[in-house]
Image (cartoon, rainbow, N blue to C red; front, side):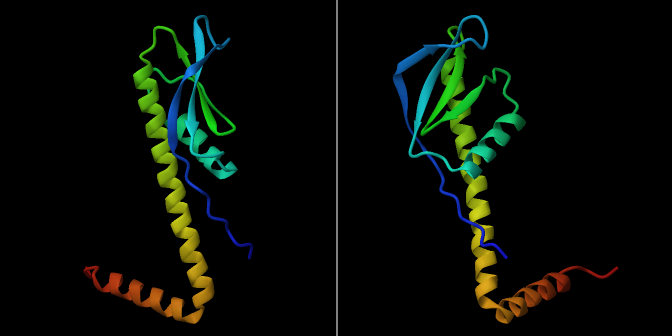
Length: 136
């Protein structure tokens, strides 16, 4: 069995207040950047994009990952604070999912190393849960 690899979380370091570029997404579109604590790994980017796709945010604009930065599209008249808050929420949700995945990987590693001891421990936990279920 291939060993699963833990993935590093990535945090927002700062908002780049200097770099603003014209963008051709729509008339009046601009791009600004949010600096991250590092270059996200592929799995982090995948989860971030999934969270963006499934999010419900009425003013959702395109966000792309460029190296160690997020490139955020905005209109000049948009509420940029709301866009930044949305990005913060996406990064937080992504990191939560990464941490959950990392915990599962750690448990799988403990199981692999623990062998039979771990199996007995899990069986006992299942028995405990079953005893807590009332018979009908």
